[in-house]
Image 1: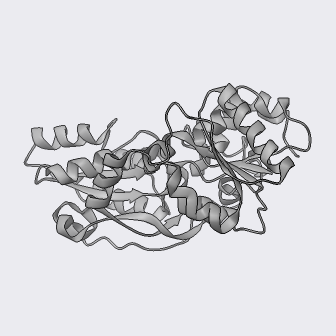
Image 2: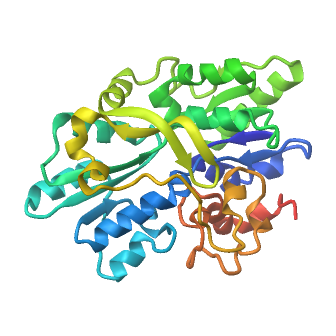
Amino acid sequence: MLMHVCGSHEWTITHFGIRTLLPQNVEVRSGPGCPVCVTPAADIDSAVRLSLDGKTILTYGDMSRARGSGMSLFDAKAAGGDVNIIYSVHDAVRMASAKPAREFVFFAVGFETTAPPTAYEILKGPPDNLTFLVSYRYVPPAVGAVAMSPELAVDGFINAGHASTITGMKAYQPVFEKTHKSMVFSGFEPNDVLISIAMLLRQLAQNEPKMENEYTRAVTWEGNVKAQQAMDKAFERVEGYWRGVATIPDSGFRIREEFLEYDARAKYGLKEIPGNEQFVPKARCGEVILGKIDPPECPLYMRECTPSSPKGPTMVSSEGTCKIWADHKMLASMRCRV
């Protein structure tokens, strides 16, 4: 069984019907590669609470629709909360600069792909009325946690090309040395994915696990060193809770003490509550996130939980497996196991 840890790879695989082209004994599962899906409910609850307390919450469109333990930011906006959709952290800086009398909070979610611009703004010194509710996650430790799971029994990984452009292949070396699981760093075109699968199958057939780079036009061994340096200066890595997965050491980001004036948790006394993924009753989002089941195996899929009325985070985000399968359900159902 092969696994990717990237919503963009799932989109390519499902949209282009790649699973229909594979032999029956080759299975490609979707892992925890959707940042909205793994954002803790407690962090969403904190953002909701701040918006209802009069703070202006700035976040991405998908993130506004994911529910915490109760409400989403979209719900909070309907209840009178101040929530604005933006496209980048630079939009947050611009908006805060334009309205210095208001308090702005950027709900910073994503992987190491989107963390460097936020780190850069923190280092540069944002406006005094802007703080950051940081909920970034670092992918290599999550790949390690999945690789070591005997229950999942993954044989090889298709690693995300964009995240690896930042970290470089070297960030995965400790995982590889510990697990000896085959890895290929892949681009996102259909041919990239097919070539990556072929590279993994060759490794497995020859019993020669290694780290190979299919995405040579973007991924290097060292990665983007300047981006790494910015992240290291602005953030320290701590354990991070991945909703529906686990608390994984060294996979979370926290603003360093010297920049606490920009940390919404410190400014507003927010608690990091480890925790319960708090999905709706009967939902099997956690199992979808971990690649244990396909979306149609959830009893709510396309019944109570649809793209127009999502109940769980995997149906909210454009990178969520359930949303992708729902958008392409004809292709997806051709390889459904139920």
